[in-house]
Length: 202
Image (cartoon, rainbow, N blue to C red):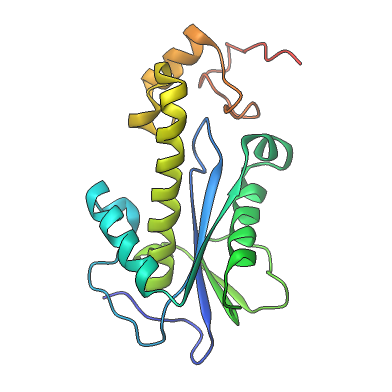
């Protein structure tokens, strides 16, 4: 059973991101504040859930949460500030957008920059330990999937409907054949090799 909160007695927001390892598309993050006594046995790390389950849980989370929000950082910003900083910025943007001000923040992973003057804690595999982080992982993943599915309609050759921008063989083969889109992260090793380099132009 996932725990309800880390900071006893404080209004706590859980944060997680999706899309860090992708070659294309924005990185998404979510922040979720759940009621103090909230329980939902179905909530878990989004990677452990089927797509259908994630979307069903998204509806429950949005209905039950005290507040929730999603933050986005674009491929251009990722190239400029690097993916670690971009992931943290996406979480800060999600926290900024919450309709209720949190008093503390818990974050999946091991890297975070303080948000305003709030106490914060990073928790490795937090999306499998705390309800609010699990809820954030589901929102970040499903909203990013929606976004990548939309891009897939414009650029079907990259198979984004299936790979969501992650570095699959089919995705990399398409980059070799068709080049890159405005949504590819130019600072990434897009072909997965040291020998081959793309001429990105200006």
